[in-house]
Image (cartoon, rainbow, N blue to C red; front, top):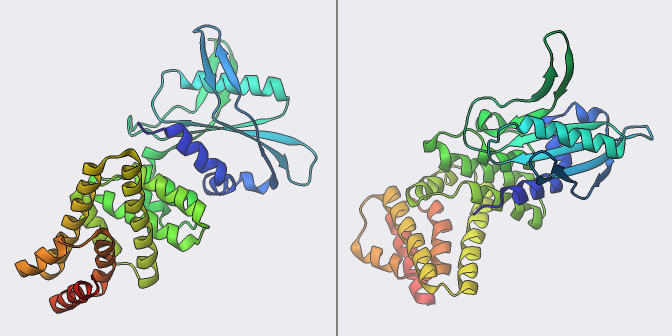
Length: 317
């Protein structure tokens, strides 16, 4: 099971300023970005239903050039929930009551369905007058088009494109574009891993999609190709290491076999039918050589290049 709450909280906490900048640039006009403090989770009890709820993320921030503060409350919601708008109001009211400072409420909906626009308001009205109209900001990812974020130099865009509205046939392309954007950001290794792990979790491709994904990578310019290949290689190594730790040797073998089959299909896609001896040589490669072939294949222009490369590998081994 995917721990959606943890993934989104880790992403937004790590890239909080980038998150606000991407979706609410107007807030950056008055938010002091050097004053951000994340508060402990608040626990709220629904007295009518007897259930306890935890707020996802609360940041205390300062107004620019002022000595006053406000809260930014962000809820990450991975499933549709009846009367969620009422719960958002309850959070707001109790936070406002406890801290006695303004609260800026945001919810990010990451579910795949329903696709209709979500409610962003809670109100209490009577026939003769309106008692309450509470509004909160909504980011509904399945309402957003990933193509609109392709040129955003923002790590949050690189991650969240993986959860936006994507046609099934575009999944490999979106994954490749997420990583292309990520490589251009030149983040430190820890943050790079956080984003790439987020993307890989939500765009877990089938074998046929993996082949299309590799084809997309081959269209990138050389430095970007290399950076993306390094990320995908690290994914494969992590999967194998996790398998070793869990003692799942058969699962590891299947993973390596799948990688060999994918490389072989890429070779045939590029050169057409190849000599059966070359096929045998490819399937006999170890995991390190398969990874190396995946990168080297981008530079091959004819079958002879592949044959020469395999010959050199045989000499080394």
